Image (tube, rainbow, N blue to C red):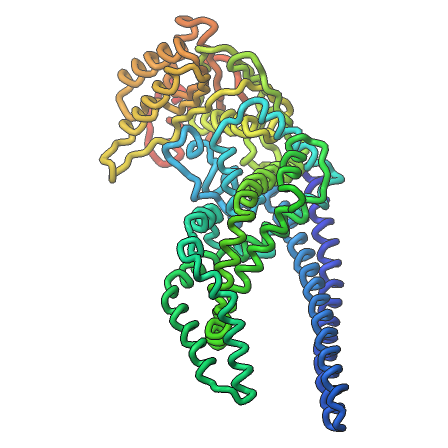
Length: 606
């Protein structure tokens, strides 16, 4: 981790140095633009003053062309400057992630679902979450795809394909290209973009199909209007021009609602389309070895048309459409050139030619963005392992397994193994000893493994299964639900899930804690027996030592593990190390005593 941190620091420093040089060059060219404009104005004025009209016009045209060339040069330099700035920022963000400073990153709270089988209990979304640690996507489609992968176990062949793709992207010699790909969309705003909603709306629109006569007027009427206006200047009647202008006004009025709808729906997509175009231009010419990456890249083509070209066209259309924002400009453009209706036609024409291709390609781009997030995550954590998928039901074999969201320099890791259906690992332990954290450690690494990502372990071999948790059940006043009943509902879902053939790996923390000890014990034992007969296995943490007796009732199917603590004077010491057997050391009495509760002395440990 320290080596990666040093590397990111060096990269950030190098980009800062390049950024400073680029800023100086951009400033120089900016002044050159001013010089060209002033020089052109003075030159043209001198020619016109001396009566050399032809030379004056030629100088205006020449300096205008030169000004446009310098302006484009400055735009490229400015883009380069911003790119270097963003690359430096990205490397500083990588350092923050390594240090556990996640609060500035998107927490993916929009994807949180308290009814999901495991995401709420395992801190997949929300503050200090796995999403914050892994996600590098900027666009909504990239974030959504990564969230989907977090929420759903991928088929084993797809997991292997993703692992291969991520491994290629995470190679050291790929990092420059990878970071360039990550920051491309950062040049643009991604506020409330909903590309699919826009495409669905656009697909339902057919203004020119519903009014085919309008197409002829859109292209003929502006020509007639301009001709009539020119004729008016040469002495012909102005009534003809006025008539054409009146017709344009009435047409604009008739289709005012459609014009406003097209503008309102499309203008918010401009930045997103520009972003996709930049990303695709970076991706399209590259050649990959991993089949999944090459399938994504080749899927971006339709015949000889690159999707970046298609998306660039719609971005241009939206940009021209936005000229109506200027009241003065809109008045002249729509009064003479039927501007809005022309670009509505262009947009509908684009839809007919490119919409299907773009929709499919953006799905591929979303997948690529999710893979880049996983690759950057894997590169930043070189001590993480690539998990191996097992064909043995419910096999879980881990060496130095730890929680990726614990950023301690001395992160505690444990070895653990189990296999076979109908198996329950009972984990007992004193308060704060680490048993709940261990369950979350197992769960969050299984989620990483089943999406194709690296895991926080030296080695992990795991069989694919549906992960299910019941840990943070709470009361719900709006639904008039107690915490105990909420937990029962979670357990009911688990029982329903395990009635099918799909393997289910469960992680249950202090089950039935909302009732008395006798009912809790009886209910927990009944649940373990019921799950034992199904295609399910998992871990249960508990303070109920009597559950440990089930190791004798169901030998080989129930095993006891524990976390222990020791008390030295007024200190409670934890080693957070998983051990075989039932916990024999408890600290509740000591903790209460340290909190000021006057406990009676007993012979028990507490």
